[in-house]
Image 1 (tube, rainbow, N blue to C red):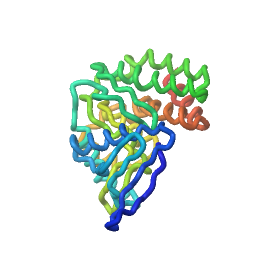
Image 2: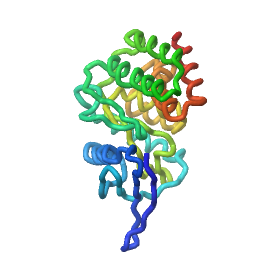
Image 3: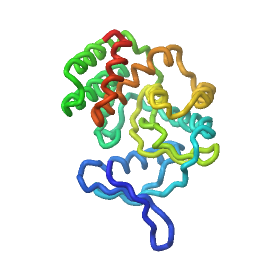
Image 4: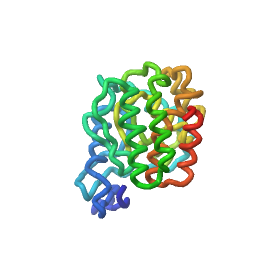
Length: 257
């Protein structure tokens, strides 16, 4: 993830500098994702001024306001982002979630992509890191084998930010000024909504406005948001272990695994 600094230039302007001293932050991939969003969507993200594997210089964006007044605007921005579609699920290259590589081979089937590249992949790296118990790993594998019975025909593959939690959103008044640290790929857009719901990134006003602009299919709140939340939960198990292991266990029980 790198070290993050606010740097002042000789003309008095500010930039954000990310520095990777460990060689593990993949700053080049982060720069790619930010540039992709600026070129292919209207989502506000910081402009990239310079990037290498060890240094990323970005626009400094004012923010720090409460997110609640800006929830309708966030819904409008993300609904528009989800209108950027592709022919298949995945992406033209692998991306990141945090500093963890996110595999994105183009896949026609959403159930197959979610099973292989999200659930089984994240469970595997969490297991290899020693933070996901073997029994839970087997239960994730069991659930992954049943996805065809749970996931309906999805929406077209939509571009998602992929990591919308409150720390990655800047607001001023009732407007969102920037989304930070993307984890982009083309997915069922419910993946974005499930992530937001899991971490309470936005409240009811967000979902009300989003539903006015883009239909939220029946069964999302009752079932699929919990299923899709397994991916970020497993990623958090990989990073942190702890209470996220218990959250994975509860979710698996919900689906009889």
